Amino acid sequence: MAAKNLLEIENLHTWFELKKYGFVTVGNVRAVDNVSFTIEKGEAISLVGESGCGKSSLAKTILGLYNPREGHINFAGTVLDSSDEEQMDWYRAKVGYVQQDPYGALPPFMTLKKILEEPMKINGIKDSEERIQRIKETMEELKLTPVDDFLSKFPHMLSGGQQQRTVIARALVLDPDLLIADEPVSMLDASVRIEILELLQKIQHERDLSVMYITHDLSTVRYFSKRIMVMYGGKIVERSPVGDLLDNPAHPYSIALLHAISEPDAENVDTYKEVPSGEPPSLLNPPEGCRFHPRCKYKIDGLCDEEIPPDFGCGMEGHQVACWLYRQEGEGIPDDS
Ligand code: SF4
Image 1 (cartoon, rainbow, N blue to C red):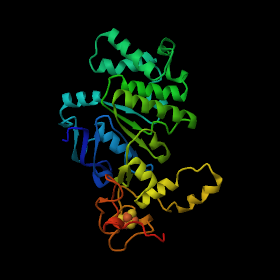
Image 2 (tube, rainbow, N blue to C red):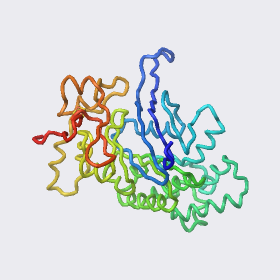
Image 3 (cartoon, protein in one colour):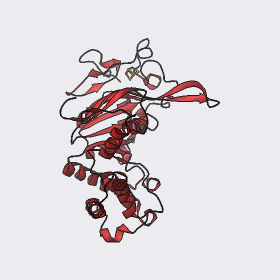
Image 4 (tube, rainbow, N blue to C red):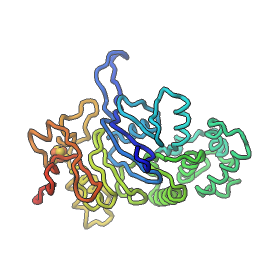
C-alpha cells in the first residue's frame, strides 16, 4: 500500500444473487463490477452517477455492510477480512457514515444526547464525562448550539438541516479517519445544501479527514473534492482532478451528466437537448462491451458492443476514461459532433 493512501479498493465486485422460489439462483445483479481506486489521508473525492448506477452499493461494501464477491479493501495498511469481527469493529469505528435521509436515519424516540452517546457506548467508551465532553465538542463543531438546548431534543423537533447536522455529528463523534457521505444534501432545500456542504468542507480541512462524497448532482462536487469519479452501470467510467473533468469531460456519459445540470439562465436551456435518450442499464443483464453503448451516439460497431473498454489516459495527469474513442493518443470525441 502506498504510504499516503488511507483506503485502497482493488478489483471490488459486489454482486447480489437473484433467487426464484427463494432458492433457485436465476442471475446476479452486478451492482459493483470490478472497481478499483484509492483515497489518500486527508483527501476528499466525489463519486457521481445517476440513481441505480451502483454508488450506494459501493459505499455499503466499503462500510462492511455488504460482503464483496471478489476484490479487496485495504484500510490504513490492513486488508479487511469480514470474518474477523474484532478487526471489523476496529474498522467501523474508523469510518463514519452519513445517510441521505436524515429523518429516517435518526431513531425517533431518542434525544440527541442518546443518539450521539450510543456509538461511544457500543465502542466501549465507558467514562460518561468523556462521552458528554465529546458530544458537546462535536455539537459545537456542527453548530448545534446552544448545545444544552439541543441535547434534550428529539429528531422531529429539528429542521431538516439540523437533522442532517445531527447525522454528521453522530458519524464524527468517534473521530473517524474516513467519512462516507451518501447523497448528504439531496433531500434538503437548496439554501441549506450549500450551508451543509460548506460545513463539511470546513470539518474535512480542520480534521484532515478523508471524505468520499457520493452524489448524482455534479453541480455540488466543486465544494470540497479534488478528484472525481463517474460511475455508470456498476463501473467507474471516468476519473480525474475535479476541475479537469468539469471543464473537459471526456466520457460521453460524463458529458451528458454535465448537460443535465440545472441551468438557471433561460437562454442556455438548449443544453438539455443533448442529454442521451434511454435508461440506465439493467445490472442483472448488463449490455456486452461498454455499458453505455445502447445510449451512445459515438458507438463503434463491433468494438463498443463487444469489448469492455479499459482506462485510457486523456487530458491532465490522473485523467482516465474507459471509452474506446480514446484508444489512440490525441483522439477523443469527434470534432463535428
Ligand atoms: Fe460510447 Fe463506445 Fe465510448 Fe462506450 S466505449 S462511451 S459506446 S464510444
